[in-house]
Picture 1 (cartoon, helix red, strand yellow):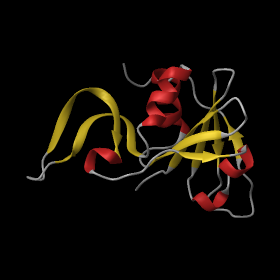
Picture 2 (cartoon, rainbow, N blue to C red):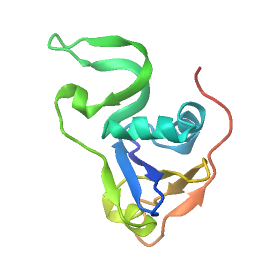
Picture 3 (cartoon, helix red, strand yellow):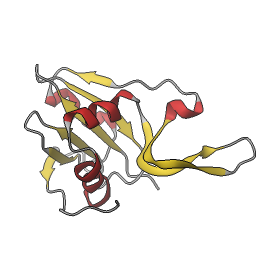
Picture 4 (cartoon, one colour):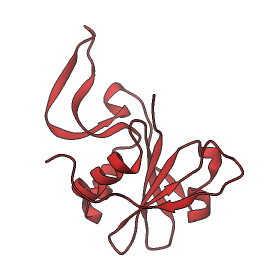
Length: 143
């Protein structure tokens, strides 16, 4: 089962450019991957530039016509565009728009202008609760 997330970059005008991330969006995995491997503005911009993705850190390709999963030469994102879909980044004018619970993601990440990742638990399964800031555990998962 997926743990849906959104990965965003806060821009100079306080708008947020973001993409959807389908698998393993919880802070103990995605949060740590973002902090370990996407820890500069340039790396975050490159990640988001590819559009919505299945996962941001894998060496798997999507299944080929024979139904086999091939391996990439190195770890990185698995973008939906790799299988022919057009899913460009989304621009929200404010953090309030970005954290809209109608998006149905379980977590939302924001790379701040200070160069830090912030994670919000969207409380997707409790409509009475607002999104809340949660800690991203420290430590890298993969080299």
